Length: 113
Length: 516
Figure (cartoon, each protein chain N blue to C red):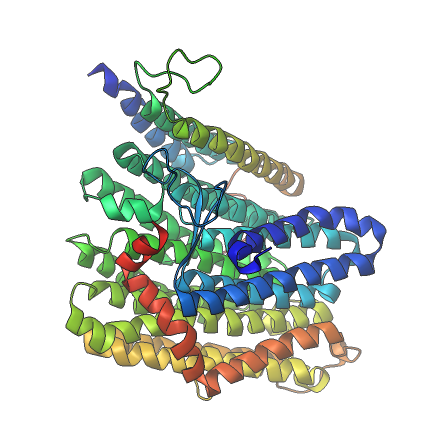
């Protein structure tokens, strides 16, 4: 049972993030929602990769030759970097939006349709 | 060095190198920079062309990164493909050919269209986008597909926000990047689900071992909804008119092929990974319904628009519907050999042929819209009039594009639409009738554009307007000629490129066998 806790947390976090994106009216809060989903996906990948008796694949330190395949960790690292780039870009866009409209509310928009 | 052996990775690496070297070379002068950009794109085009020839005559080409020999897909120590593998089959090269050609033409067009001050940033991003598109269609494993998808989202998002001194542009880019970020994370979640179950990321190896458990179906739903969102199908199409409408016109043309790269991912997942799913018909019908909805809602919304680029963007949604419809019908009958041979293959050929046709004529239309904006300075149809007096070439090119999108002979849109009508009629007559109705509505809305922008008396306001510069005319001319040639000699293209591409999608076992 305890093994399923990370996955339960992932589910709750994704729902939290999605509801923030859908229901919040502030652009920064939407970005926070995306960031929460990103972290929960990272948590999901990391908890997939966890093996309780596994040996970290660092050749110089490993006590035996059988080590875990570090693919989930590699995926997580890549996703952290990509998330960083995406969120930096989104925040810069929000800064520009604020400069133009002096507001972060999504209801104050100019684009129709 | 054996060029053809390394062509798959070079086709990704060359635009990437081009992108990263452009800011440096722009310090040496603008002629060198322009030459560098065009040459690197030409070389990519050449690589994709020889790869097309090779793949169509010799079958799938696999390229393993980091292996001693590129065709050793499975390492000798363990028996699963752990390395990143590029799997290039007839459908991938077809998509790569379409995207690189459009990017090449758009970059020739942009030599004059984009202001000199921002040009090196623009081309850096455009080449990055090219690398992402080619990578997305060439990759043979799910995770690099995700990485290239995100690279595509970020670079195209920045390009949408290129005129960031306008508020609407920033808003459009924000909308686009939020949709892309959510889509990308959904894709990653699905990849995690599949990896957790099978310890595999390679598409061919996964297709071999998939057992269609509950978590696989969840992954399928996540992947299909994410890619449908990214290619602009209807329930989540709201980013398309904003992003296409507010980006620079040459970028709108490239965005069309960029969203078609997501369409490629959608078809690759549903055909190569899941075509043996017992309930594949449900998946196929949801793709068909998405297609029909996109077709209809896209065109109805387009008629209401008065902004020339938003109008064309809504047509892009509607045309994506045709591709989804054609290929969805192919997926629906994939288990039934008789139906597949009698109309399924034709429907898929129609859908695939529509991908390249749409890229060409919608590219042409966006470039003509760009030409109007370049000279007239407005996107509002109500303010334009009598432009045919001053811009004869643009008028002719617009007319060619408009007739092609409405599906009139002898232009290319007619051929692929006819293939879709004929084959879909034998699957379900109602769908075919809706498709024809949409085509008529398309014609109606383009007649409106043509009359309000080009016809009418000369207006005093626009007395000083001249035809656009030569490079822009050349780019539009190439696209117009392609529209006409593909419409006059469709057999050559369909038999040599489209048919192998359709069979590459249908024949799942051949893909698996070609990679492993």
